[in-house]
Length: 204
Image 1 (cartoon, rainbow, N blue to C red):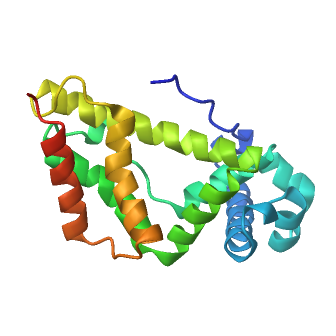
Image 2: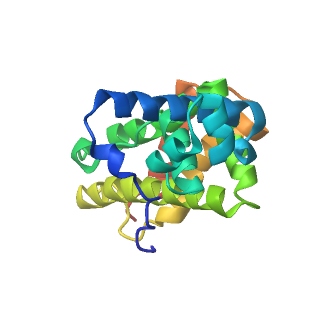
């Protein structure tokens, strides 16, 4: 497993408690989200977001120095948070359900599903979007690795469980069902995906 990718740089305003700064940042992200939904990742430029938010380009640059910063903040605001290491209970099925419920929630939301699909496609051609995708994927790998480590320690998973293949079978199954098979991502599907993963990776 590769080391952590550098997260897109954060503005110094991220720690500023001035409510005016927070409102300004939120208006920029809201405008960027509307552009993302309407026209895709290509629409997320400092100039277009500034015009949509009714602020100067300098303001947008102050909050988000790089385009990848702006894209990341926009995608993050529209997505679900991943479970933290402190959320891992050690009960494999419970932890996997918590992990997958975040993605399942996104896959049930047509807005978030559209954003995920656009980012997946555009990341093949746009370096800034690719950085956002890769940063999110690294965070997903870390969260899943924590769950897998707890499952191995509890004797519920084989010690040679493959993190990449595990993610492919879990997250990939939900993405395939929603984006390719146009099937609902319901509780039965999530439970079936989890059962298959546990059965396939049980200690031998």
